[in-house]
Length: 76
Image (cartoon, rainbow, N blue to C red):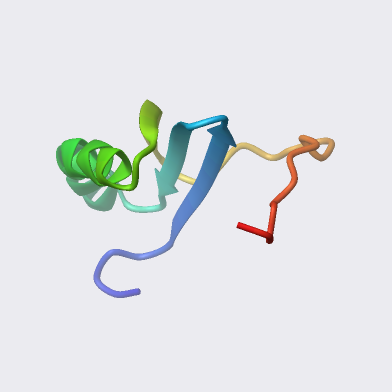
């Protein structure tokens, strides 16, 4: 999406703890996401989740050599 450019995200949910990792291809977008991280924490609390780590990096996400083994419960 312009003008932000590509953004990649990985969300992990363990119990009620939600951790988020995001990577933005553009440095300015990564900086904006970092500035808005407190709002993401608040939104997770409002969804009755415990915010875990919120990590925002620049560039593409690291390449994965093997699947992480996380599954999506579509019954929720």
